[in-house]
Every structure is written in structure tokens, then in C-alpha cells.
Image (tube, rainbow, N blue to C red; front, side, top):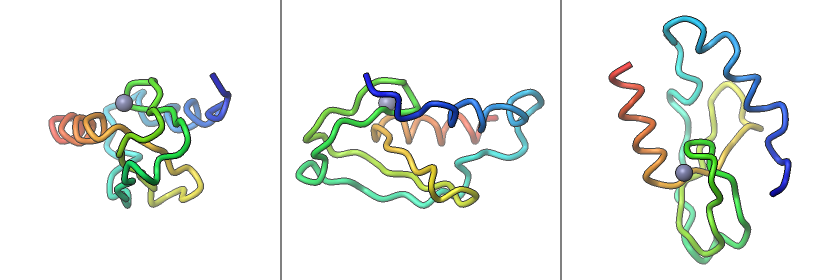
Length: 88
Ligand SMILES: [Zn+2]
């Protein structure tokens, strides 16, 4: 397990979750589909905190407020996140 996310996860939770989140960090994020042949690394999905294995097509999301915090998501996790956010 690599520590590629240290500090970052905490940062975007503080202040956003305490109250009803009127602002979704990932709202309006630019997404990009990664094809299986492009997935030549293992990534950690922030939706479920599990690895995205090599060779699995997935989604890269780039938050509009912080383009250097782009993250790789399982497709299902990304879609599930969007659904949850709408219910909010
Ligand atoms: Zn996931």
C-alpha cells in the first residue's frame, strides 16, 4: 500500500462535512475515461478506498477547485457518488 493520499483526504473533508455540504468538492469535476490498456498502474479509489487494479478501465476526476487533486475512481464508485450527492 502506498501513501499517495497522505494529507489530502483530510483536507477536503474538514469544513465540508461538518455541516450539510452545500458544496460538493467533486461537483462539476471534469472526468476522463481511462481505458483498460491505459491503466498500467494501481490506483486507490477514494470512493471505496480499494485499489483499482492494472488493466481495469476506470474514471479520472479532476475537481475544478484543485486540478492537482485529480483522483482515479472505479466507475461504479464515481456513479454512486454522484447519486448520493444529488440526494444530499
Ligand atoms: Zn471504488
